[in-house]
Length: 220
Image (cartoon, rainbow, N blue to C red; front, top):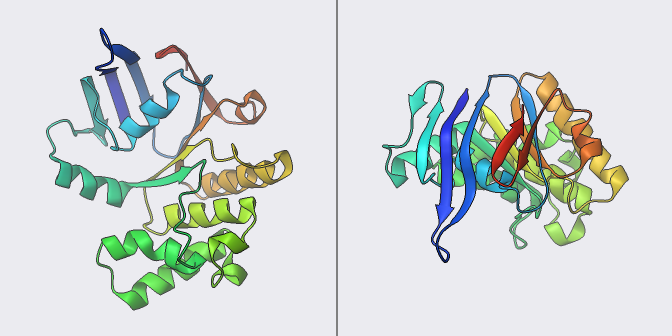
C-alpha cells in the first residue's frame, strides 16, 4: 500500500537539520504497524510524509504503486482526503461543534450532502461506541471520549489507511488501553493502521514494529 524509498527530510536550520535519513519502508494492505522511537527520532515526520501532510526533501513515496511526488497541493489534498484518516494525540476537535458535527467535518469539506454526512457520522460513532454522546461538545467529554470521537472522524471517510500519532499520549493507562483495543478491533475488520508510539508496552502487542532512531530505521 505504501512504499517509502530512500526518503530524506531536511529542514533549513543552520547548516541543515536532517530529521529523516534514507528511510526505506513498505507497508502492505491490511497490516497493523507500530513506529517506535523516542521523542525527536523522526517518527512523526515520517507519519506526516506517509499521510501526505508534508513532502520529503528527496526520495520516492508511492501509494498502491502510484508515485505521488509530482502531484500538486490540490491533488495531494484530494488523495489524502480519500485515502487517509488521521488520529492525533491532541484530538484536534473543534470546541464549538458537537461530537456529530466534528465527525462530519471531513465530509463537509468534500461537499457531501448533509443527509449523507449525518448518516455516515452516525455509523462511525456507532463503531467507536459514541452514539449516545453525539450531541455533546468536546468540553463535556472525557479524554477517552474525545479520542473515540477523533477515531470516528478518521473513519467517516472510509479511508484505506488510518495513521495514529501517539493516540494514547494524553490518556491514563486504562483509557489508553481501551483506545488500543479499539484500534485492534478496527484492524480486525481489515483496516490498515500505522501507529506512532514511544511506549514499548503498547508496541509489544502490535503484529509488526518498526524501530526508528535519529531519523534512521533500525529494525523492521
